[in-house]
Image 1 (cartoon, rainbow, N blue to C red):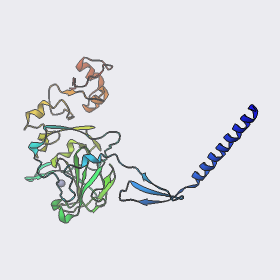
Image 2: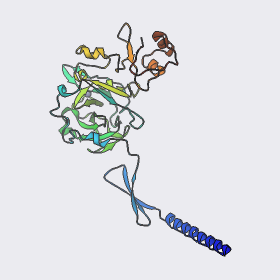
Image 3: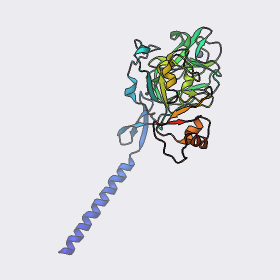
Image 4: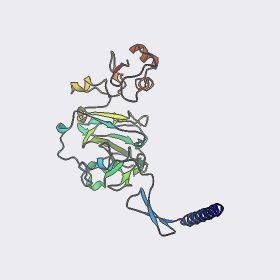
Length: 322
Ligand SMILES: [Zn+2]
């Protein structure tokens, strides 16, 4: 009896395996027949041969959509009406880039006109000459808030404004053609328009602005155009930056607070100051990184601070860098 029992078990087991294999081969027979576009360019619908369908996400950029809802307005060039500079905190720390939030230079070139007063008129961005038709790219991942033709943007010409999920907005003016629509998610490096000379412009160039809560500040505080990178992975905005006379690389005379904090988070290479310069250690810092930032060497840093190369850097500790 025992023997028959075992044989029966074996037969049942074999049948189960055969059925499973048959199911599997039927499953494998279903193959994707077609893909359909959706309103969202990063989502496709896959239609399978067995009449099933599913959504497929393709290369969706990392964007925290919830962070974009504040004063969202696709009609107005500047969305933060009623938000005064006074109502903003003195300093705001923003993450500019991390593993899933890259940066891309909107266009290669040299900044030929800087932020600030120009012939007694405020110039709230920087100008980079280009060839008409050259692709202009999004600086960071974000969602297009404004994509507007010349007739509605005043001097900006064809304009794209992108909102980023850290709260910054970037403006791209004088485009010859706009390649995106409002509410469209874009990734850093994606072409959003073609360079041109529309609006108040004397020749083909990109007018590039950076704004926080609608308030412009010198884009060169964030972007090192010459080297095609961001100045740092984080950005500490100070209220004083919203003053049109406040420039990158020029100490703010207006606010003594800015000077007191100079050593903490602004990463100006200290070329203009004489005397000791200090830097406050942040998470992720290494002596090597700090040495590069301040154009010095690890051994010089060690000597200045009487530490060794192996000394563990304590966050918040001030390090003499010059
Ligand atoms: Zn300009």
